[in-house]
Length: 179
Image (cartoon, rainbow, N blue to C red; front, top):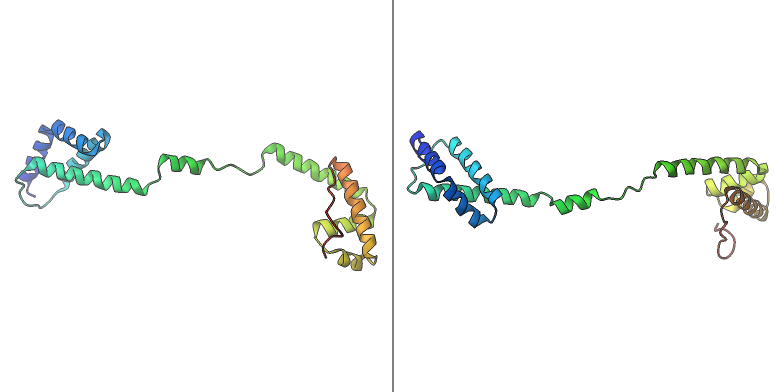
């Protein structure tokens, strides 16, 4: 577009800005979008280099502004809505708070003290069964005792630790621990 055509479009845009703004607002249903589209239209006119002469500058400017608004709406559809952003930011924080961390550390210290009070074999049975998740028969073979002895030591160790921690020991339903 020649400098004269660009100047003509710029002059028409500034002279009929309010008319174009009202027309765009009615068409788009948004004053904000209409204003943004007209500003972008002005910038596009300033960047134009070579284009054919325009017979109807107002219609041409209106069409540019509509195209700008359409492009913006398409771009906004790719973005998250405020509701979607709020939903993403409303993820509950499941990490423990400071009080829970302190309480957990105190429980560990109390468990350490309770385990220290146990006889050596009972402590070994507890660590193997509860911490390392070893089956009773492997613990029995490792310690050179019967499976029944392991079961009794584990039950007594659990009772002792539960009492020291002020917890209720829940009984398993049916039979010995799985092998």
